[in-house]
Length: 126
Image 1 (cartoon, helix red, strand yellow):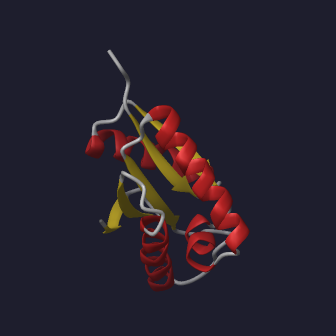
Image 2: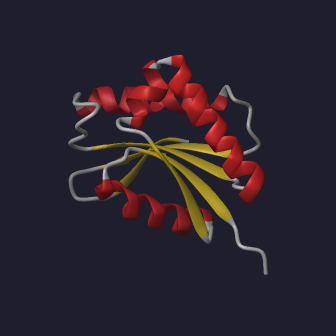
């Protein structure tokens, strides 16, 4: 039986990896999650620079083409060292990041997620 994949565009912060992976497995019924990480992923996708966004896009395409990923989650989180902004700004950055990923016109569902201080995952936009 063929295994299914999702993709997480997540921060490098290890506190977010397991909650996001579990959430994607549960809500999108995938077996595995490809992790594409960047310090402050929501900041990078929302504000650039363009060459970093392009590198992330190319990595997402690899996940889709090699593993047939059918969902991409863009993740922001509490207490992010690389994006030390308010929760409200994180939410705006997540929404802008989801918009950025959607402009890539990939054949996937794109969702924006927030991981709070208790490691609970919240949907910011879908």
